[in-house]
Structures are given as C-alpha cells and as structure tokens.
Amino acid sequence: MHQSGARSLTHARPSGRVPAIALKHSRQAANAPMPVDFYQPPASQSSAAAPDAGVSFDAAYARARAHANSGQSALALAEYDALLARAPGNVDVLLGRGIVLSRLARWPEAEADLTTAAQAAPEYADVWAALADLYRWSGRQAQAVDAYERLIALEPDAPAHRLARAALLPQAGRSLDARAASPDAVAAGYRWMANLSSSWRDVGAGPRWNEQTVSVRHYLRGASLAFESLRAQRLAQTGHAWALDGYLDLWRGAYANLRYQRAPGARLFPANAGRVELYQALGQGWELALSDDLLGFDSRVNIYGVGLARYSGNFYVQLRHQKIVSSGSNASNGSHGSGERLLGRYYYRGDADSYIELRVNRGRSDDALSLNGGRTRSGGGGVELLHYFTRDWGGRIGASFSRDGDANGGPERGLSFALYRRW
Image (cartoon, rainbow, N blue to C red):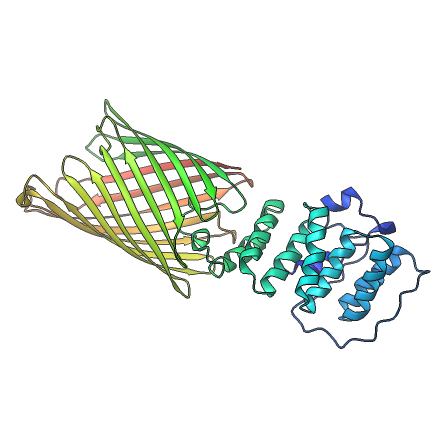
C-alpha cells in the first residue's frame, strides 16, 4: 500500500513560506528522502525540548522531519508548533504535524491540520494522501474513498490510488463503484464518458451485419446514466434505436443495471426491449448476478440469466448460464434455448481501466418448427483488449467466432472496435 506520509516529510521549504512551484511539484525534495513507516508503532518518546529560536526555519523544519522519521513524535510536535508560530498557515508544516498527530491517533487535531492544508493548497497531492490515510485508519471509509478520488484526479497515472480506493469501496457501502465487471458502470475521478463503437459480423452464406453505437454517460455518486443511439444494417435494410442504460447502488453489497430500448421502426431491432440485472456481493470476492432481458419482437423473447463471478487481485472470472424462452402465437410453436459462457479478464496494468479478456460459450436450442428435429447446438469464443493510451482516451478491439451445429449452419466471425473519451 502506498504510504503517502513517507513522501510528505521529504520536502524542505525555505524561509517559512510555500512557493507556488512547490504546490505543483510536491515530489521535488531539497534534501535526500527520509522515508517514514507509519505502520510501525511509535517509538518511546523523549521529553519535548524547547526549540532553539536561533535555528533557521529550514534547519528547524529538517530537524522536525528527522524527529518524526525516527519516531520521536513529542519532539517533532514541539518543533512543528514552533515553526507554525513563526509561519502561521505553512502548508508543509501543517502537513507534517497532521501526519504525526495521525500516528498518535489524535484524529480531530490531525484532521484540523490536514483539512486546513487542503483548503490552502487544494492541488497538493500529498495532503490528500495523508487525509486518505487518516480517514482509513480512523474507520471513516466513505471519507477515505472521497480523498482517494481527489488523489486519482490529481495523479491519474498512479495505480496505487485506484487499488486503495477499490479495496475500501465495499466497506464504504459503495458496491457499484467497486464493480470491475462493467467498465461503463463507473469511472473513478470522472463525471462524463463518450463512446463510439462499431462491429461487423460475417455469417457465412448469410448477409453480413454491421452495427454502430454512440453513447454519452454521466456518472453520479452511486449511479450512472447513459443515452445511446444505435444503428444496424443488413443488406439494404437499416434499423435505428435509442436506449437509456443506468446503474444504481441499492443496499449494502448490491447494485442493479436497468435498461430500456426503443426502435420506432422495429425493423432490425425489437420495437421495445428492456433489462433488469441485479448484482449481490457474497464476500471474499464472490458476486452473484440475476437478470431478465425482454425483447419485444413479433414473438416475445425472454432471456433469463444467472451468473457467479470471482474477483482476485487483477483477475476477474465469471460463469454465466442463460435460459432463452420465445413465445409464439400458441404454446406449440414456441422455442427454448440455453447457454453457458465462461469469461476471464486480466487487468494487466493493475488498475480498473485496461484489460485483456477471453471468453468461450456454448448453447443449445429447441424449436418445434425447425427442419432438423428441433434441436441444434452451437459454440464459440472471443478475445478483447481494452487499453487507455492516455488518462482520458482509450480504445477497445475485439474478435469473435461461433459455429452452429445445424447442418445448414456455417461459421460466424466478427470484429469490433470502440473509442472512449472521458472527462
């Protein structure tokens, strides 16, 4: 785990003031690094001595850091008190004293120093790191998450902040944000995302399909909502639809995905479609999902699903079973199907953004009106890569294949890509 305080005490500041450049580049230290281990208990304290008034501010600041680094908290506090008397409101001194007070579990005093420093220097990442540690150690996980979100916004390329935030989210009752299975559900540190995607499918002897989607999603605390515009083309036919897709936190460890889709022309898309999917954390990284997708074609289609997933480090694995029921004009000409999908995902950069995904699936359908006795089998798989090449821009590319067990069925191949922009 990233120890923010270790960074904070390595900075020396001249003459009791905080230069503007220091607030923007808080990693640049005038002295050699002096790491602090905040996970070891404080060493026994020597009696606090009155600071020497003849010592320069820089020397006194360096001595206070040395006392803090060696676990002599009482001496460090005395030095920091004297420094603040000479330079009231000095951000680095407030930060240093706040960290020492945190070590001593003097939470109200530590919070007062660190919040004052954050108000004076809102872009000083070390202050937010110290606040995140303070809230985490004092059991205020929701406030710790907020501090980590500010850190992520200031340092988007530091994966340690995202991992620390993700570990705290279930404890803070924000299970939706912790979800790694849906990159569209949450984007830490951002409020908006735009997405342009396209896919092509070659179905062998049949006509080719191509589809495009444009979406804009807004992220809120514990929720997100997207508007999507969809287009599909098959031969000379073109269909259009729009959709609203949202994620919502429910009770502790639970969240839902709700979707409504409407196609006024009802040519290649169903006239109306919807989805309700419920996720429930089971503990130890396990997650259960239940879903119902309704497709309003001429014959109504319901796709019922149940999934079991496991999060482990940078890996995510899900096994999903689906039951497909299509109702015809009467009970005798309906059809049924079922399928399983195994999905594995590896977040190769250690964050919640970039991953490589592999999946395999199989299925069976029973249709009383089919020419081969009403039973067909199919199988397939796919691979997908999602990569953020800057903090705000990302791309996804994927390939898939499948084959019908029907004697008339041929191989189906597909390609897809997407472009993401978040802010």
